[in-house]
View: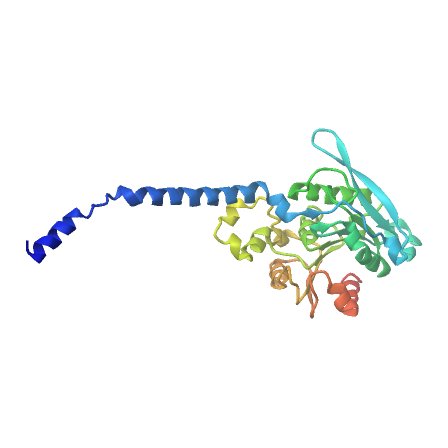
Length: 305
């Protein structure tokens, strides 16, 4: 047998693999990847509120730490089924404001961000009170001493509206109220202001354009259809165009959580009276501490006739 004949025999002895030999493993791998992808999408959908909100129940600090006079308040929130739950908060009356007739007073409704509770905002609420405003700061349901289950976009909007109603019941008029929102609270502030065009004005501190835009900042979410998956939308950029009250935007240039460019976009989209103040080197939670005088003057000058 020649060498060429031997090679032919050896070649013929090599088993020929059917295409089915590799199709099945590839199909299994594809199904596994698709299942994992679907599972992550489902997790993002059903577990979304756990990604957005980070409430804490323990109250660790009160305005008393800063020698501020305050009152604990409980405000009932009516549910669709007829039951009610209480939201907890603090009322910090400004002494000079208290000397005025109720119709001449100025009050700030303070709406905090997504983390912790009003404990983390005691110092700042006290700062705003010492600037000359009486302050109502609340915890959304699920936060601090407020009752209720885990928060959602719709529930925090309802809680903010309930706090607004509480101030109206105390005798304040919309023209006496400034709504202040930090971070996620800025989105809640914008939503509340669209429902009350006669509000004196709003302050949006270190907030974002939308939750979709925030998710797009994280590379790991870019492979998913985020716009379809997000139902906790907080679409501020779509709402600011309908604002009619004055808006003061404040943002630190060194914000490590929300890019200051988002406040620029909100400002550009706002058609009512507006002002944008960047705090050089200010972080997400330190706009006031970084430059106290700029922060204070920005608020007082904007809201002083």
